[in-house]
Structures are given as C-alpha cells and as structure tokens.
Image (cartoon, rainbow, N blue to C red):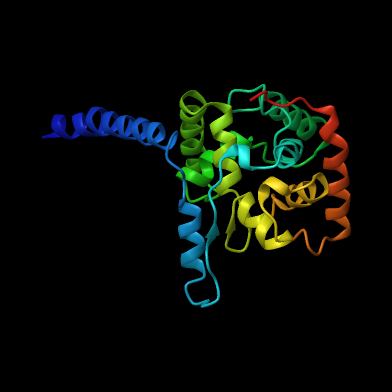
Length: 227
C-alpha cells in the first residue's frame, strides 16, 4: 500500500500534472485567453457590488498601438526581448542594492512572469505561488515565444477595477481603440500598471505624472522585438 501511494505521489501525479500543463499551454498558444484566475478572484471579491463587471476585449497584437508595447516594456521589463523569462541582471542589481545600500528587496517580475501569474495563478503573495509561476514562465517562454506572450499580456493585464487588457482600458479611459492610443496615453496607462486598482490615467497624481515622463524618456533608449 505504501509503495502504491509513493508511486502515485512521485510518478503518476507529477507525470499527469506536467502533461496536462503542456497541453494547456500549447492550446493557449492559439486560443484567446478570455478569462483568468485573477478575473475570478476579483469577481468573488466584488460579489456584493451590483455595479461591478468584468470588461475584457481580446484583440490581436497587430490591433494594439506600438506605443503601448513600447510603454509597457519601458515601464515593466526593459530587457523583455533579451531574457528567457527571468531578468537575472535586474535581480542581481536589486540584491547588490539591498546588500550595499540597504534598499528593500523588490519584485523584479518580467512581463513573462506577470503573464504566467495572471493566466495560471490567483496571484497570491506566497513563495509557493512564485515557484508555480516560475514553472509556467518556463513553459510559455518555450512554447509561446515573445510575440504571443506580449499578445496575451496586453489582453489580460489588470488595467483598472474590472478592466483587463489594453482594448478595455483604451475604451474606458479615452473612448478609442487600443490601436489608436498615442504615446502620451500609452505612458499614462503603463504608469498605472503596478497598482491599477489605486491609480487612474484620468486623474494622475504628481508621482504618476513623474512616472509617465520617465517612461516617455526611456522609450527611445530601448530596443524592441522585431515582429
């Protein structure tokens, strides 16, 4: 009996877990991601709010303004086109700053990691979630590639209360399609991404204005994937 339990725990369950995860990631390389665990989590949190609703409109990458792609890379992941899911350069810099200058340990999540978190986890702040997120990050880097990762990210990232993706954000904040977002608007949305439930591009604080300017000035200095 003990051997059978060990066989299931260490062979059968891991085997089927890996197989099913590979099949799911392969499927989502082609199928639009229209609902995520985070959307479910937010819906549960707002069950008693009758005015709350989830808004997401899936669009292809070519239907998103290049200014948005540049802004989110400048804001969230400067080396998106260079790393393989994990920005070891930024992590090493963060640890050096922590050891030498006493700065707090901060998150260095790449766009790939954020996409894995949004699509495959509930976004809890635990080390177990980070481990699971890392596994999914490796899979989507290998199976999806950068273009698909960016396409999914721009469609599922939380951009406001009940808002997911750049098309929903563009319509809600500016009354236009994501394809028509200009650089100023793109930088304003990107500046809000770290805390989309607390920040809005329509009523920017002095900090947000400063961050918007920083992102705008950084855009010309970076290189971007050639799709």
